[in-house]
Length: 400
Image: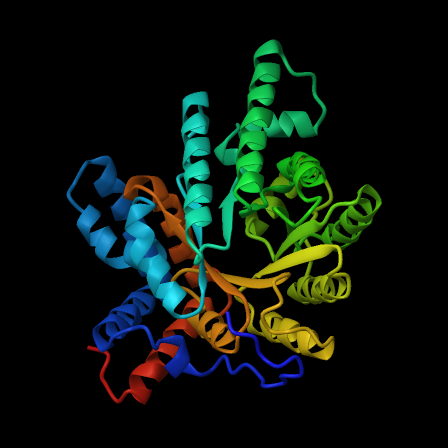
């Protein structure tokens, strides 16, 4: 990526739709407009997801319809090879790809081994491509959530569970060792609070082993949790004391309703901030802390929030950091917030898109969440819809 002057103070204009949708033809833009207009209607989304699940259960031929609509918008393909066109297109726009094997619902040792092998293939693909700066995985993709929860609670494991935990550690070490050997940075995604503690422990163990020379392993901090900012600062102090670099991916969080419901049902203190403002405040404070300690921290902002993205860019300028400082990255999901991604990339910042992939039936839970959250997140679908509508108007073409 080309270096920009250290003193560059040009603001990033996220409302510039000519940049955000430059890669889309008129036909593609109209299709995107139609898709977000549909997702803007909660009743249509709820009815549609019901019939999609039913049709797949009855083995009705609807895969091509899914593939040509929501799958095409939010996924790179069914295999790594299928994702090549997306990787190239993003690379041409000065953006990286983060291949995300988004298969869910598998919960047996054979599936965990198969997922481990697929994650290793994403690392190998990243090593061979200058357009793939990171790999990513969830610990629940390589181990049982029940095992993780029991381990976090420090319950006594039976012999079978002890063996399963040993296999989890071996899979994790194999993934991180491969990333280290091939010099590919890897994100360990965040999960629910009742298993996040053990995931944190495993992540720090891997950082201690593999982040001595450079940041390879990244843990994820969900700033909607009221303890995450302090956890980030504590992790930094531990990294300093032990002599490794802290890899930190900053997100707001994805399990808010599940967290609140479980806290209420089990009568314990809800770990989630009571207001969005408190979450935003902690998120931006985490940006400040990380940017002010970059000698020992590398960060990625996993966010669709325009204010926080702009806040980080301005903070970097204030600290005299180059826009493309390799220790600072931004990431958004494929098919969403292109106004943030493409405009940051054009301004010379390091940007990557999460590109989910996998068999259509297996990634359907991911796709349904995208559709549902676009109707429930305050203004998300409306924002995407209005941005596309604005670009159609700028191009002086109709929506159909």
